[in-house]
Image (cartoon, rainbow, N blue to C red; front, side, top):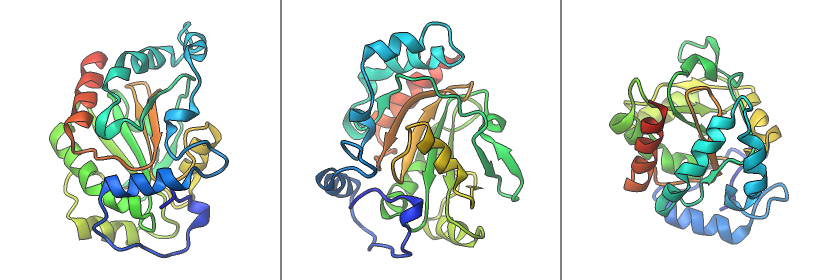
Length: 233
């Protein structure tokens, strides 16, 4: 199964029950979208030359340094995540809150966050959402948040119904019916399909990113979040 882009929505949903591992294996076998060399972001980034350029005092230089320090933890269930080597400030990333009020990622700032773009028609997104809910339940608080943003077009009805279906209790509801958030990440070279996930610091700067699903309720993911929280204190 390839990652899916919002533009490729066909309204179809695959059967539930596929494991994250099977979905990832299928995605790797089929290759990447939009001319990328692979589904996941690991192979999309350049080497230390870009790192040095990004860490020389720019606005998001500290996030680049943190990403380099966290590299040893990008393994196992989250091995597809790659430390960012170019500065990306996502403060202006726009979406709506649970009441339909416009907001930006900066409104959730002051702590590390795992930002995930998803849609109800994206089978890998549906598969990993319960794990993101558990991650928020276990690690969320004043020092960390999972910001899961639906990019379903139209009203809130479908994404809200899906949250009810899986019994999501810890995730806050965010929605971008314009798909603008996805296009912003795509323009910055962060998104090639859904799901797409970025780890940002307290200043909304990208630390690491990935395209494709992961098992977020895992020791590997928890170790990464704990380390990001510790480095942000």
